Length: 555
Image (cartoon, rainbow, N blue to C red):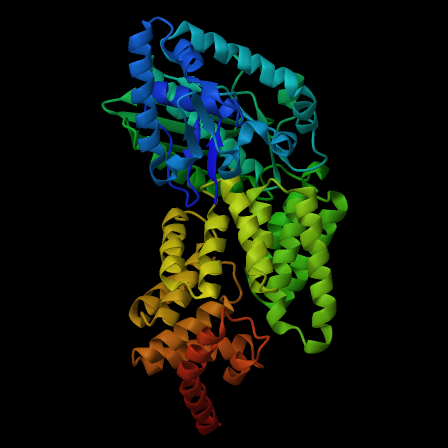
């Protein structure tokens, strides 16, 4: 498991389980930055003292360094061993750390790599001079990679991020605002159908600029300090009409708590902005948006769950890939194939698996640094192929790139569910459900909790999450997610609520007349594990008999 150190944008350190390990003070962050940039080489104590305490005497600098090392170790907590401390100096164990600065593939894929150690500043001329030199070196050394990432995509919705507007002079307001911009830009870009162009580092942006004219929408973030809080005001405006398409105002406490709050805001804002921009009426019938609209339409139909909707989703994804073969589009296609696994006849499963493997390989080859792509692919490997080791490796990388990825965390929850690690699965699933407050497919995450609690024997809470999943299904859905119905009916039966269990089972049979409870015990039926199949079979068998008896009596 790996400790992730992000130096592009505001410095951020996360543990293997997404723990926030970012040093609280700028001096400690500067110390870690110096050691991280050395990329495994030893930074001598004397050199570090000259960079961080150049205006102090030797004895005072030595004492300050010792204290800073202790503080940094405390910040890293149980992962302090990644910091290798000797009498000579400090280095990082590169076998146990990921540093985005040295991920060339990530630089080529990302349109918003971020400013090296953005907004980090300490009161030491030697360090600040080193910082400016490294920023220049980064741009120079990676000019070819950054040029590749700046190539304008063929299709998609183009969104420009304007420079942050700080409404007062409090320095931390600028830090908070830029942290939000950096994470939000990456989150939107990872969706696949939104192309992000980052102008936030420019002093000014004019509407007459050629690159701005090519944008479909512009995102503006304002941050102000007011009475112990930061007030964040965001808006997305259409470039052609100047109309505000979306906006929100939120406050976060002016304490270190903002570090924990910003990722949750990013998840919420990404969902809301994506839903707004994917509305067919927003930008009209531009050819450039064709692939993006097809993918959004396919995702909507995919979660409608009906056979005809899945057919339509497959047609839409095929057309989108013909227009532009993005890795994330192949990943969504593979994810769609997982939906179809349950309905396939044995005769076609070999052909189906071969096709799915092809889609998975294409997805990763084209988009190996997109956490959304990696998470979708990991789900298919774990659910369809039961290749848990492959799925775990993909999810590990997804969370290194984006420690707050909802789908990656959900993937880990389900992976632990499949493996029988129920307590950990539930903790992760609950975290995902709480973070996905504004996600249009939140019913899937409620279903995950319903499934896990049913298998754990927590039937009352399982029924509560199952009912909640039904309540938050999207209004345009023609059918209810089949796993929701199966586990919810089983949960109600297990707490003695036969009437509600039967009602749910009738809905399940209407959606899938061929479904029989005994099919759950078949080796290739897509249930998490044999234990889950046994629990469902035990609970649903009497419900199936009762429903059949009632129907026969009516006839």
